[in-house]
Length: 454
Image (cartoon, rainbow, N blue to C red; front, top):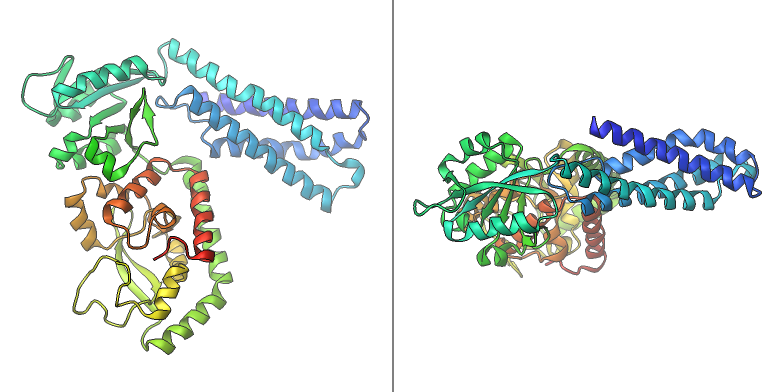
């Protein structure tokens, strides 16, 4: 009901803003036909605004969202919707409407100003009011060693802007219990149910010293739709450098129960399919030229198939242009990519530098094995190996792997597993259209300049 009410309120505001601004513009001397044009465009304008607000998660009144976050989402949704509405009106004017029925730019600017002045502020007021009434509050438990979780829980309770209520502490060691002790980590499932917990705050040392707890925590997160925050230790900060999320001044790594859900997941999949189809068609001449070059330099198959681990560890065959000698791993077995790899052919080095060898993976996108943007898929051998060395490595499998990744844009081709992991976790923790767009733009720059590709 809360979401439906918000959608209806937004729709009413959009209608009043555009109608009011258009009437005012006509009163100041604009052609009266402008009102007729608005009448035909008003319903699409409302639909565009609701879709953009949903895409920017402006209707997600989750317990773990701050007022500032909601206001920012609303502002971004309004701006995107205004530009999209202006583009639609411009298209209609160019091809269908006479010049006398043009909706002036001043109408869009004034409507945008009205919406920016009201919508973000309304969400801040509504969220703050509900939290004062005891609604939209998160019940949190802190998990860790008794000597440090008490201070962290106290800091979270005192300084959080999101309305957290600390229900108590759960110890990871059998020693003197901390204040507000609820039980041992082995009882966490029952504790979560008994105390109606919404979020779990875990001190990173728990996983550094006892990595066997991580799968159980992630499983609990999935089954009970609970968000897990991890306070990174120095070790985890060096490995992941995830200072992109904070609550009450605490830098946190966040494990969400469903990293991809709602409008973002739907639109992302639609974008994947559209871009994959367009990419295969537009890149056909490039693929043909690359295939000829591969066959001339190194006789053998043009395409290379290899088993990789996808979402939730599901195996699939990735398709790439062959960049190495035939049977390159016959003697060495699986080897992590390295700089100046002697197995790579001269044509293969060029294809890798320009990311051309990745183009056939558009087929994997269409099949649903991969996405356009996401952590790069690894081989099962490396997944098993690095999962024992890096406690958070399995978290990469919570989303579809991608043709391009944050590590591709800001890292190097021969980056270490720890380097790739920190980029992948940063991407998963900050999933958004903006981040996907930045990665895609960065990938285009690499293709054109070769920067960052090894």
